[in-house]
Amino acid sequence: MAQSPAPRLPGRHLVQVPGPTNVPERVLRAMAAPTLDHRGPEFATLFQEFMPLLQRVFSTSGPVVIFPGSGTGGWEAALVNTLSPGDAVLTVETGHFASLWAKVAAQFGLDVQTIATDWRSPVNPALVRERLSADAAHAIKAVLVTHNETSTGVTSDIAAVREAIDAAGHPALLFVDAVSSLASIDYRHDEWRVDVTVAGSQKGLMLPPGLGFNAVSEKALAASTGASLPRAFWEWKPVLDQNASGFFPYTPATNLLLGLREALGMLMEEGLEQIFSRHLRHSRAARAAVEAWGLELLCTAKEAYSPTVTAVLLPEGHTDAEFRKVAHDHFGLALGAGMGQLAGKVFRIGHLGDFDDLSLIAALAGVELSLERGGLPHHHGGVAAALDELRASA
Image (tube, rainbow, N blue to C red; front, top):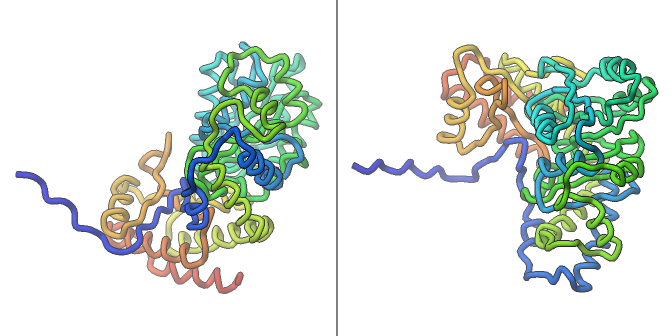
């Protein structure tokens, strides 16, 4: 006998994973446009309109290379444009995505040297300085760090990492994954002298997945002239050469770029400082709810609490898969899963992108209802605690 379909859940379903995030109606409408000639003057005008705004979001006056792809493609582009076979790279494994980036580097035959963490702490700049100071031959060509580790809800201090590299007197390039921090957390590519910043379209930029970004320093561009890892699609030079006149060397994701122009305009309307403050405020309210429930935050360093994602340890005897199924099936709420060595152990609440107080409270109410429906041990009052935090910081 055929199984009966699950009953329909009415109302708006909430996707509160830490990316892809909700796409605003204005952006959806901007993308719902007729096909644009990517070799015509209208496209060149489009490029000239969005690129200066994109540079403002990265806080850079230098080039930002755009690829049809994702953050993973951005990782690869950073590596293959600047490094050669056998080069050493220093990575700090703060979570699942930092670990994946290191695996990409290893697949290209790079000598990956890793500083391990407990996945609950940020990058320790002192350890970076120690490792680089010991590298008298300057074999390490790049340092790879994740600004905001999406899998753990831990944010690292990139300015302090740059200071550590400088204090060691080391010439290594600094590569930063800013996928879940860009346009949500204060980020300064030029001021912190980052050499390649990697980002994607599907989080703070409020777009669907499909665009990957590399913000590139002059030092990284110089390194690309002597790098010999294989590269074709991910090569910067053809893109930058064509960008000079407002075009691309291949068919770009034209409708996503139309959406990018609209999304960047929305970011400028709100103001980047206001956006950063909004994300900090919502993260404080989310943590207030978690503490009121009597649950444990994964991040153990208060100064490293993420403004964009809160990872919560599940009580003993419960898994994230069963808890998220309750949230999804009974309340139409999608929450982030535990990843890598955290699989089964945590759930993650995303609070980034096009997001307001009401969206946060709805998501937290869904979590509280799911805790009760799933029989997880907890205290009541998480939503009330979040409301108190929002009132106090209004």
